[in-house]
Amino acid sequence: MKHRYTTDKGVDFIKGFERFVPRVYDDGYGYPTIGYGHMLLPGEMFDLIGEEEAEALLRRDLFKAERSVLRLIDLPLGDNEYDALVSFAFNAGGGALQRSTLRMKLNRGEDKEEVAAEFLKWIYAGGKKTRGLLRRRLAEREMFLS
Image (spheres, rainbow, N blue to C red):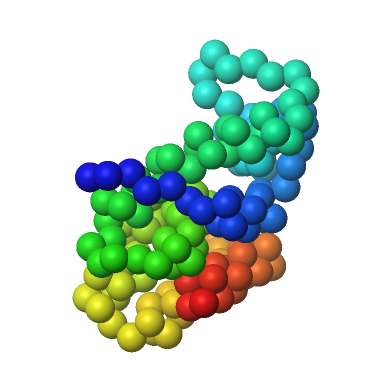
């Protein structure tokens, strides 16, 4: 399978939700994180990074989400659809995309509006609805439909 990368517009979209932090911080779930949501891997050490290095880490991290979308979606996707799904997979995880009704409806070729509505089911963190996830899913839905 040929790899497909997130567009620059898609990367900027994701950066808009993954705030830039130049120092290592706890992501709220106990994971040391830096830059645009990069979770430190075993052996990685950072003191302070700039936005350019943070974007390079983000693009590297997006590779896994891109592979998930390419592996799990059977239909050809436009750039906005692809970028929205990569954003979703990057944030919620490839496993979430794999078991989602969003994926099932999309692969069955169901109505695009009905498929896009499935983004809005993924707005919970720790069992609680969050404004940040609602905002992100609404934006992913709009990107998917545009």
